[in-house]
Amino acid sequence: MKLKSIAVLLAVLIPSYLVFAPDKGQIPSDLRDAVSAGAYSDLSGSGAATATPEVPAPARPGRDESKSIYGENSMHEYYQVPAQLKRIADSTVAFVYKSSLYFDPVGKVYKIKNTVKLSQASYLDESEDFSSQSGLSSCSGSYLGKGLVMTAGHCVSPDPKVSNYFENFFMVFGWKYDKEGSPALDFPADAVYSIKKVETRALDGQGDTRRDFALVSMDRDASDRQPLTLEKVQVPKIGQKVFTIGYPLGLAVKINDPDQAQVYVVEKTVFQTNIDVFGGNSGGAAFDSATNKIVGIVITAVGTEYSYELNQDFSFIADFSLPTDIIEYKPHLGTVALGSALRGSVLGMFRDSRATISILDENKYLITLPKGSRFENRALTFNLVTGVGGKNVFNRGKLMRDKQESFGTGVMRLPEEIKNLVQP
Image 1 (cartoon, rainbow, N blue to C red):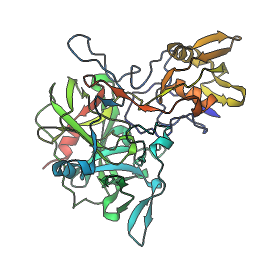
Image 2 (image 1 turned 90 degrees about the vertical axis):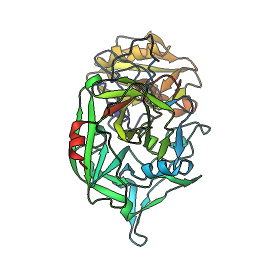
Image 3 (image 1 turned 180 degrees about the horizontal axis):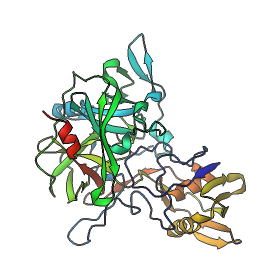
Image 4 (image 1 turned 60 degrees about the vertical axis):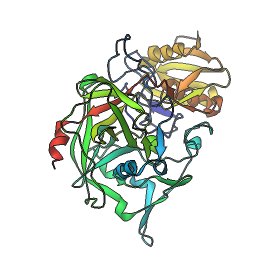
């Protein structure tokens, strides 16, 4: 089983259905928190290649940058919210891979091919919120009228060689729960759209100059949907109440409480909030809670959604004898073979995880982790352990949760390119 290492990328809100080390020849898109020139910080819920600079400690709440729930869970189902919020949710879309749906020509509906509970797909504790629900989508978007949908730049690509190539997606209205325990299982043809063109897109910059947005055109206009409204005049302000509507973890639409989150830091192209989000919320609109106008696009947190705890002491051998950055799992030998260039980074990660490290020879190290060690799902350390020992060495995962007064959800300020294309 061989994997290619990936340099640390800015964490983005992409879904995470495969949380254990894969058996294919490459690292999946949700394992983007790997290694960077011998330095590593635990991507996601905390630290690591963060997309924005640290905020000075005094006078401001701390950053705790998970894809997480801040304080109480503010995500509500469609059937639980007032009519006004339902109308807004009706104009949001889920980006669904075309391979996940099939068309029934008799009923003239698109049906979901397979459903797998989150507790199964992500080895999530069954007591956790949403554990009995199933994921479907990869990103979120907002209908702005005239056949235009706004999302994040990392959600769609014009490159046909990558998995998020725009032609691989349907944009689906109506992925929701109309009542408790009853999610939509099929979608009428007039609720499912292909992407005709990426009208404008940016995915560049870092920190307070990060740009991550896209505006795509639909294969036909959604004449039965009410366009959402952009805030083109007022800029985000610290203390402003904001919320999002989107598809966290690929689940049916969740509407966040408009009174729960606020803006904490305003930067050049992004602002930071404590909106409750997970992978899959990317591309969803951030709304001003007072006006329901769109003030930004949800784009970042840091990588993880789940935390796992070892249920036993666990040891394995890390062999850094490979000449490249390939990672090869040998569970029958209790060994993972890695490129020599990864030595410093990987050993540093495990030291941070309270591991005892013994030198066996010039390339081999015995790594022993104590019971109770915690790992987050997008951390390379987590994938190395599961690649050798499997998922059962861990207790089932818990959703990431942070203090209400902390923050880390990054929102792209509305770019002029989109404002100019979406004219009244």
